[in-house]
Length: 349
Image 1: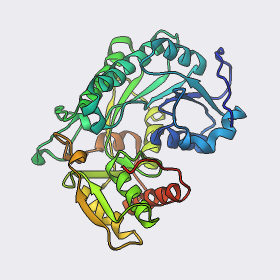
Image 2: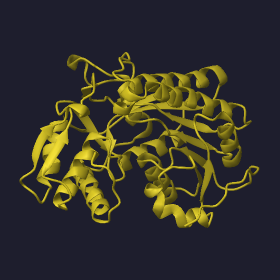
Image 3: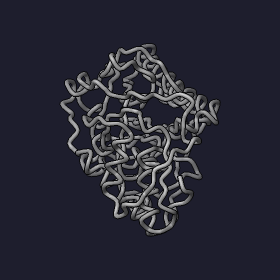
Image 4: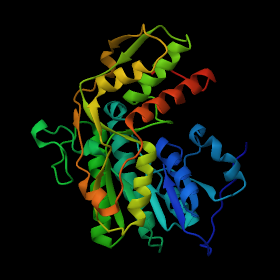
C-alpha cells in the first residue's frame, strides 16, 4: 500500500495534535493505538524514509485515508527535516520516543548513539522552540541513566545520582539533561521520564525477553535446534507492559503537566532475567530446550539492578500498572509465534 506524500501546512482549527517521534517502534506504535482509542487527537508520526513499517501495518489504511493519522519524514540527525516536521505537525503535544535505543549496539557504535540521542533531542527541541508553538513535550530518557546502583540503595528514586554503564546510558543522561535545560532556560513545557523495563508485543528482538521469546517460537516451529542463547541472566529487573507505559505517557502530558518535571515510571513485578526466562520456557510447547550463554550477548558492564521507586509519578497522576507480568510474557511469546509462522522474522537474534 502506497503512503501519502507529506506536505507542509498551516495550523488548522480542530482537535489537539500530537507528534510522535519513533512512531514505528514498539512504544510509538502502541502510543498511537492508545491515543486513537482514548482521545480525538490528530496524530502525526515522524519516521525515516527507510523505517520498517511492520509495527504500524494496521494503521496504513488510516494513514492513506488521512483518518486522524498522518506522517512526516525526518531524521534526528538532520535539523532542517525536524524543522519541517514540526511545521507540518503543528503539535499541541510532542512525544519524543525516537532514539538509538539498543544498549548492546551502543558499544559498537558509540558516536552514532551519542549524536542521535543527545544532539538529535537538542535539534528537535530547538525546532520546537523556534517554531512559535508552545506544545507540551515529553522527552523519553531511560532508567539506564542510573546504571550500576548498589543494592542497599534500591528502589531507585528520581534523585539517585547517575552512574551510566553503556554509551547508550550516557546518551540518555544527555537526553535527560537537555530536556530539563530547555524547560529551565526557555520556559518550554518539557517533561522527562526514566521508564524502567517495559515490554510486550512488537518488542525488538535485540532485547533479552524478546529474543528469548523469538528463539522459543522458532524452536517450536522447528526452524532452529532446541538451544536458546542468552547473555547475563542475573540482572534484576522490574517489568512493565508497554500498554501500561503508553497510558502513563498520555497521563503525563494531560494531568497537570509541570515544566521541567522528571519522573521514574515502571511496573511492580520484580524478578531476575533468569526467572523471566524460566517463565517464558514454562509457556513453551517444548520441554527439551537447552539454555546456553553466548559470550557475544554479554555487555562489558551492565546495569544489573533496575528497581524503581515510582511514588512521585503515581502520586501526581494516579497511574498504576494494570497488566500482569504473566499476560505480558504470554502476549510477547504469542506475538513471536505469529511472526515466525507467517515468516515475518529475519535473523536468529
